[in-house]
Image (tube, rainbow over all chains, first blue to last red; front, side, top):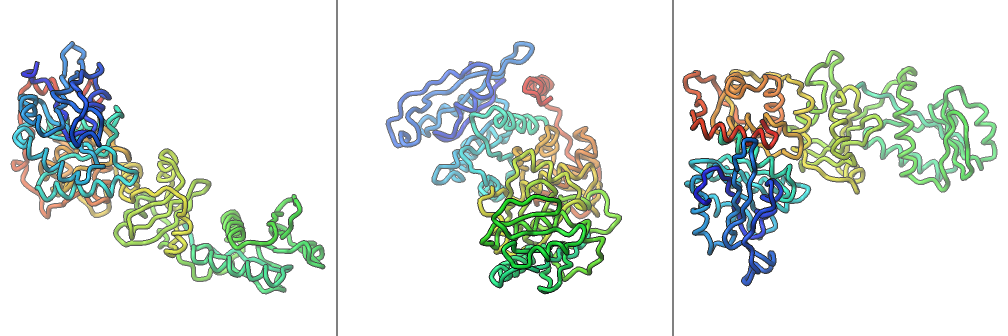
Length: 176
Length: 333
């Protein structure tokens, strides 16, 4: 199953909303491999994904687009490359409440650099306030410094319209 | 929008304290661009005749009121009648300001007919009479406010005001998303746009929701452009995006994803963009205006030969089909 190429990868740090985002857009509730947090991540949320989240979107002809959520903790980063191999593209979710969310965005863009180069990435910022334009500017400025132009949208990971906008942008990039 | 003549207020039956209250209120309204003038005490010919009903000869003054003149009574009793309004005592500056603002708006037609010359009133430069197209829109106002920092009060008949502060890039309003769209669609010449002081803007904005000016400007660009490109901008000049637009919560049509994806990858002219995306020229113009207004577009100086344009690579047909089917399944196709 992991070798399937009809897949979109959701990644990002613990608590960014990957599981919720997959649930918001998939046809079935995601299968999660969550366990209780034991380390510092306990302060962020009580459980964490140790292998992956999985669900799918079923197309009219029965084809499944697989949706994989990577584990957020860096100690499981060996799973990231396995999950991403052959995928269509990447959805990176970043929690704006983190002390340094821009640095987190940097980290994941570097970690998946090869995959992004071959496919594409969209970035969703979760837990962002009403004045989202000003807060998004920090992420956009960092991307300009990196010489990259990627979509960065404010989203609520539980909102299917918000998650759909991310996928829509990703598909536009893949076709362009 | 024409420059307005002042609302003339005749304080024919007021005590000294109430007279001062009216004077302060009218001075404050001047700072908000609402022109009112307090006439001398013995001049009862203003648009509004103010009388304290506890005044000894208040009846006599009221009986002399001319046809069409609004009688403003300072009274704690209920009053009713045509052109009759009342204000409770003790009179407060804020209450007088609100009342005179309302009366000013409603009496503009009458005031214009009276031909009273206007005092120096600060208004945003009025558009020419033959204003049409994109210049007769609030997008035009907001676009120029972003480039020339101002504090504006945009008054829209019957709808919430927009309080624009382009110094700090915010718009304060009580309008919800749907109402904001309605406001932005109102032609410029049907609005009242006044430049106001920092103090006044802060007072008027208190308790209102703050939005980013860029978000409102983006929406205005999409709603108001109607396919007309900004004046002086051409369709054969290469442009590209500096940043992906992030206005998915402010009106982002599905075809804009396609446009943005191309412009993020390379610089192309709007003519080439139409060819590459298949999107109609009018939709491209709307997107361009909105993106340019909020500073996302980088323009190149000269046109580029067509052979230099990067064509979308012929991706694996099977993958392309899969992407398109997914787009259809999610309602994008």
